[in-house]
Image (cartoon, rainbow, N blue to C red):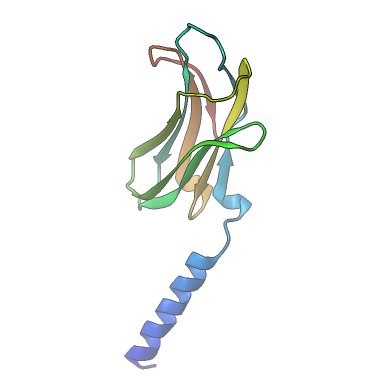
Length: 136
């Protein structure tokens, strides 16, 4: 096989890999966490979804904190997250008038979910974690 055909084959293979849909084996979810969101005059706590790359190579993906009704509250992408690096997304302002909000974290990685770890934490008004749940 000549060099040109090998390059074209490599490009085609990369395209197929990148165009493949994300499957369930690439997604982690946390359990639901509740947070008080309508307490006039009181400082609000926050929700924080954290991801760490536990693989030996960089990872790409997205992190979302999602309301129980399916509405995303915050989303961020990570590209080339290096081994042992951490990335987070935070929600500390809530626009809904309900006194309690239920939310969970969804983590999608472009490879297998075993290459990352994740958690969702609820913090108090000082930023201290009061609840932490693991993504599975």
